[in-house]
Length: 256
Image (cartoon, rainbow, N blue to C red; front, side):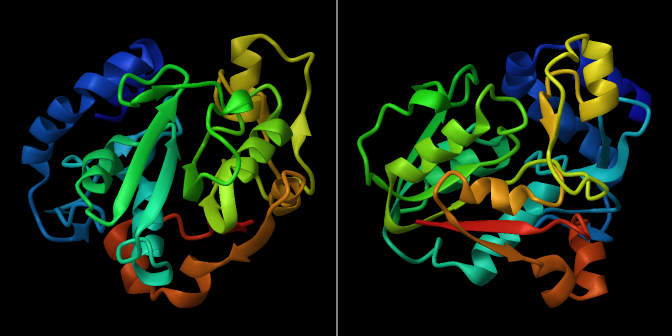
């Protein structure tokens, strides 16, 4: 199963996967019936989640067959429920590179004015380049932009644009892959070969790998950043296993 999913992720273009992947995953989920793990996004339960990853180091117990949430999405969903007013306050929300598991759920929430945007995703309503967000200053209460900053040409400009369109007092979740062995962000513009990029930056379409200083990088965009060790400090081992969460991921809560 891991090998098949890895090949699909590597060789089928992402827009096609975004449109059709949920049907395939739900069929596979029929073979994973059980009650060992639970998705806090869609509340589905399984014996275990599907494996996920582009290469031989793909992760076991990662992908929810019903809503396609990964570990980071389940963490975000749980964090929003337990530590924010996202499900109760009236909020105008910008979701950049929207994840399939959230779109329908957030669109149905009566308290949200919810806008999705991306440069290429067929799931997003607004086509835009994050370097030039086509909304006025101080438009949104909340912004989500996860696993994007490792792809863009100028991540400081992209962060600044998100900061610009937030209202004063607004907040954003802007997560990215990190390697904690690096004190600072690892970049090398001379690495252009896709195979070398995958070796150095985890994927062939990544331009950098953020290190322990990621919170300071977000501050360069103008944010006040709280590095919230929600999983490590507030959740039990049983909850981490039940929801299959990334046990060492820091949530970067960014405020304007």
